[in-house]
Picture 1 (cartoon, rainbow, N blue to C red):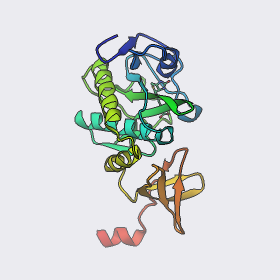
Picture 2 (cartoon, helix red, strand yellow):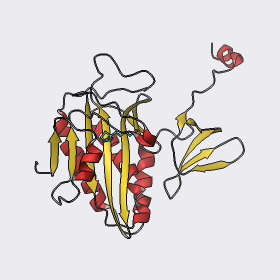
Picture 3 (cartoon, rainbow, N blue to C red):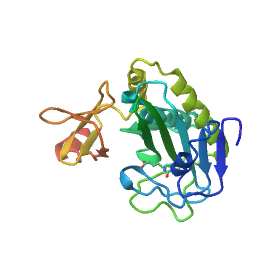
Length: 246
Ligand code: BTN
């Protein structure tokens, strides 16, 4: 284990599961791996985890605030990853709830799992960051991109662990969500971005105080509390508009 309490494994099934297995160790803060054989994504999906092409990292958080504010953590993790991607020279944008996009494609995803017992909680924040495009490319349909950085994965893992733990420590006990929601919106896709969830389509109008997404449809404002949203391509401009521009 190194100075940030990070264990590096050559291979494991899932770094989130490794963290969960080792929760009794108070000195352990994070587990990372070169390769995951059963990397897990949100909503029961698989996380593509080829050896050496990505960072697979899970960080253990023992929050000092009420379990009702745990939703702050995945949003905060998105901010920390977006800050890192930005510091490495790429323009990062957050897509609710916590996908990190570069040029409209997903460069990182976050899977937050919490174990709650009464007023006490432990959260495991899993971060998958695409570092290099695999030789055979990403599997079809992933709509993914890679960071393409020469910085070693272990350095990125240390930085992310240190920064996420420091950000969590600084959150106020009272209403930790407020500051997270504020910063999250500074990294988000632009207001007005067309999005949909199932049959509800509209434009992105920011987050509410609870971190839910506000979607402006033709007729009303809808709050989306769970799941994810899909980006919708804008319809082509009408013919007259093209003509007017020419
Ligand atoms: C998503 O679906 O966008 C979330 C992906 C989270 C993947 C990471 S990789 C490290 C950690 N271990 C896992 O099994 N999943 C998360």
